[in-house]
Amino acid sequence: MKLGARSQKLLAEGRVAHLATADQYARPHLVPIVFAWQDVYVFTPIDRKPKSVSDWRELRRVRNIEANGRVSVEVDEYSEDWTRLVWVRVDGLAEILTSGAPHDLGIQLLEAKYPQYARMPLGDAPIVRITIEHVSEWHG
Image (tube, rainbow, N blue to C red; front, top):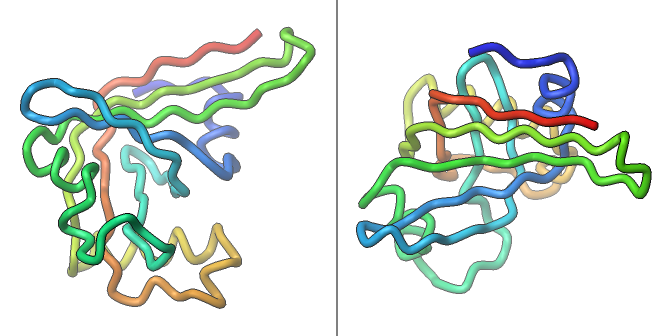
């Protein structure tokens, strides 16, 4: 996996991304996420922000990952000056982590990146870990 400098910066410093999942019938689902990136992994939490369901296991993205772990995460930076546009998309295999060292690493990276988690700690929140298999990137 080779990333250009602008894509590395975007993955390291980007504040919001979009997670694309699909169910077993290839019906797409897209949600905005917070995320942390390290090496070949992207981590995103199932945190305590209000959800449309009472049990996190019922979230469409979670059900989609369980049925079809292939996902994409896209991070972009828009500018009215189109020579400054940049985006990076990582495609990979997602898994839901609820404990263990990789789960704890995801929690640590996310809490370090987002100061909001000081007021709303992730605790034992489930973490989606995406193992990056392919990268696409573009910049103006």
